[in-house]
Length: 234
Ligand code: ADP
Ligand code: MG
Image 1: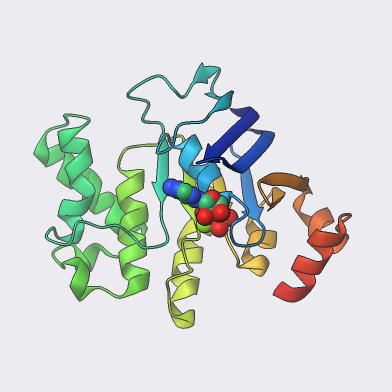
Image 2: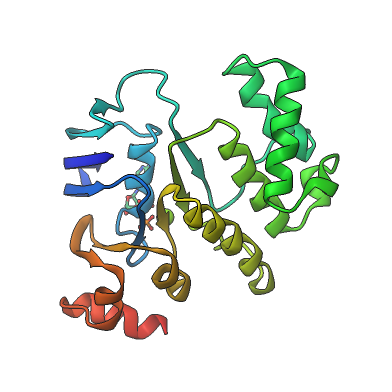
């Protein structure tokens, strides 16, 4: 479904992605793990067209994502990025109304459905400052889902959360996995990554240095740097 082929990306001469290639099948969940600064966020940002790639190509359903207006990809960031002056419901219905041009009643219906899916229907009129970090992130997930993406990207969705709030966000993502949402998840939650993902990609210094079946990588990583990383994480 997603094809990433020989992707390179530099920032002012610093090579951040070096010949990145991998495929994602429909319904598959892939975790991207690796040390800080290895290029994980940049990779997700390239896939969601927030950054332009220097060379190589990225296709979704055989269509290059460089085609303008491509909206099949949803992304959730570490820091929620909700509109602070809009309620939970308003945050969710904004893009469907403005971008997808669906009428307000329909958008509200969809928004409520999604809020109930992430367990927050009772918070529809709350502003972000009135919500916990975990609740904000669940609203952010609902907002991304409101655009009916075929693929969801998560960039460390629980890294900004207090430990006791991590579980509620991971549970929403696990629920999406059960419904066979295609997902790429950058995370430092190794137990979760192992549980939820079919495959794992390990990045270090702009390169994929190991990729494969999730259980295999967690049980018996081949590369010494992957071994070292995983032994530090658990
Ligand atoms: P990760 O998400 O794995 O921590 P990033 O993709 O955020 O890694 O960063 C990879 C490298 O690219 C880092 O060295 C970072 O400083 C650099 N980088 C990321 N974004 C930019 C940018 N917009 N301008 C310049 N350098 C950047
Ligand atoms: Mg990052």
